[in-house]
Length: 384
Ligand code: LLP
Image 1 (cartoon, helix red, strand yellow):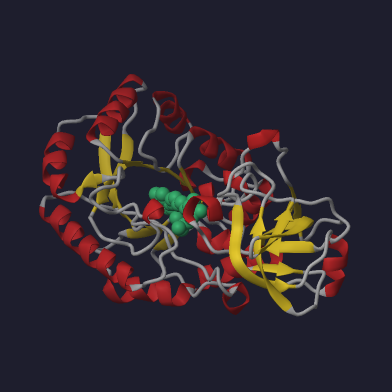
Image 2 (cartoon, protein in one colour; image 1 turned 90 degrees about the vertical axis):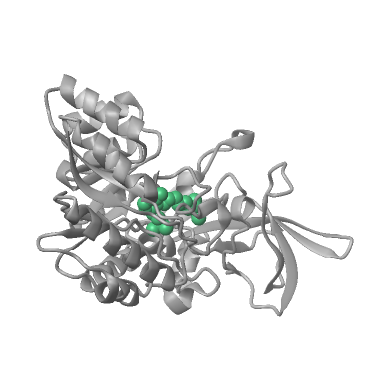
């Protein structure tokens, strides 16, 4: 992914920093769009990465935005996203956020509890508007991914229990300022097993028929996001296999006339285009371990510390034989560890290290713990 000329240029920059390959992002989005059916729409999950240059590219390609906070809505609007292409999800929307979203005339609210639906109805009444909503359902399907990023099981806080649907529908019928236009699922993230999406399609078909039989005119079927990427060997799949993913729905999902299907992909769009660069500060042997202490830590990329996530790591300055390292950050936490017993070319102080597949849930989850400054982001079309 990095040729020697690019490495030379990157090597001059102060670490740690993020680097985004916008050509790869462009190709990824083209491949995504190429795999879509006519009635499929993608709402990019902006939570994965909200950098303006990335959002602008998303907008150039005419994708919509899935936002989960008022500030994400504002960010999308500032990047010139058409409000009619913004959906608003999230389990805990505040009154202020709901007012903002209504006033900005976004496309649809994805609601996660009846209390929320009631509040949206009340606010809509006060503002003298009718608001279109979708109901997020929790179908209790195991997405077979890390337990912190499973969202469609009985013990997760998301959505409305699927067998409470008829109850909710009865209550919604009495609300005057709400129009139920859709239903929504999101089962989890970094899902590799496409069978999970077969199951999701089957559940969606049941719900779709049920709603039709109950005379609800459903326009939007939102199947969430969740498609995983190849963290182990990113160069083998720089662009995720969108075709196989959408083919699952093409084969298994039933839509009625004029229904639109929404996908809220995040990671699979931006994951591989971002990398975190760092330099080796110190090397030390301790007991039987080789510790490599680098200048990036969990403040820049928390995924390994939080989910024990694997990211591919390379030393771009060494071609020596590989030995085993524990690659750790500088923060005062033992979990500030990128990898244990990781084979890397034998290294020296100052070598340039790259942590791959960091474009999604990397920079957006950074913190200033230990008062660390936010890492700068560079882009492939910058003149640095
Ligand atoms: N829609 C909803 C309602 C979501 O909650 C999410 C992600 C997405 C769409 C996008 O999912 P994706 O296509 O990116 O898998 N910080 C974790 C991931 C958290 C995902 C949260 N929700 C990580 O670093 O793995």
